[in-house]
Length: 226
Image (cartoon, rainbow, N blue to C red):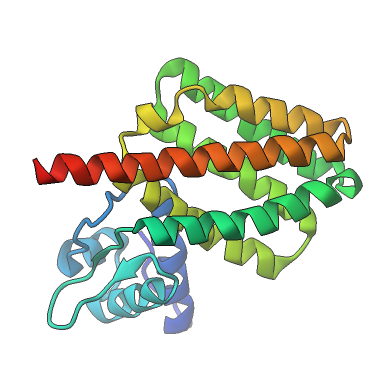
């Protein structure tokens, strides 16, 4: 529930709706291509339809929502080319963060550790959507070592796009199983200050993750044609 408090600007309410919906996308709450129906969604977040429309327009600008002419908004479905572009951007930011991680403060490593622990716990419990969210939070915490608000904001949107790519490619269990160990390996290298090793492990990690998403997209497309 969001609403608008006394004296609160409509713009700030719109921004909070954007933040809320983006966070839900990152957490896997919306399926790829799912319709975003204005009336129930506006009621759910307790805002007017005009405010919701503006929020959806901003999310469309971030590449998370599409708004075809004379049709309702829906969650974006990612193509293979777009997935490759997301991973290209991930490599730039995450490798730079790993390179600079030795200078990171204790709170940054604490955030990474908490995310890895959450990933491990979720995987043990078979909570695959939560496992995916925790893994994204780990990589978000890694990029935060760059100490750049602009980078943080860009990467937050990038990870929401990645979550939608996962949703289009395969079920959560198939994608998430086994990655907790790899997140732990990367974290331990970063924590110990082994910069060159961590960069090497990270590059292989991202290559394998990208391949898995692209394979899933091809598999989903083939199944859709049957």
